[in-house]
Image (cartoon, rainbow, N blue to C red; front, side, top):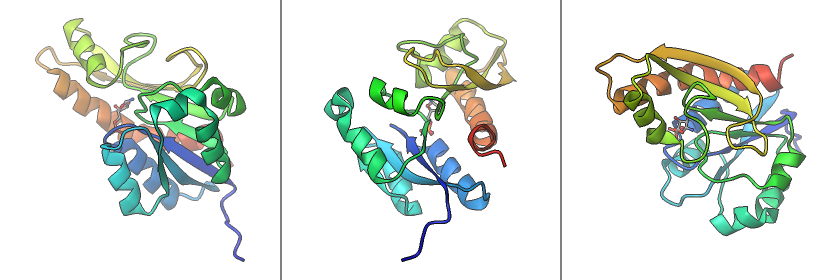
Length: 196
Ligand code: GRF
């Protein structure tokens, strides 16, 4: 039997398009950090991330709201795939407290604003960019942070910012944010968890 050479196995949790998930999968294939994306966890049967995972040959699991509420099904899936680290990349569902506890220090999230600005309940996806434009913020950005029991409240690891032009729409801001995410997210994960 051939033993896997990767010591660390990442599960990426995503609910939507999955551009970050795909970027992370590709990064860890191209850069030897002793880690790989071994599982995609999704809670939305219509999410683009499922097709991306399939096309890239990464195992994925689709779990229901109820599975997450109870917590033991996700925990079992993570154990089954030998998961050591979790990355939340646009995952729109509360993570069970038992998973946060057992992955303490090994679970990160990306938020599409400069936390603590535009964070908290209801602040996700386009809602964040619409609020940034409505508030006429001159600058916005991304925050990569540890995950704690508090929504968007874990310790901040990294932030990057970008100017908001007065003429920018929420869609324009979203495009700028996606560029920052593509540029920084996988590298920050690697540097946070798998420094050699
Ligand atoms: C990203 O903007 C991320 O910051 C936010 O949700 C979005 C997910 O985009 N939390 P994608 O599904 O990775 O394309």
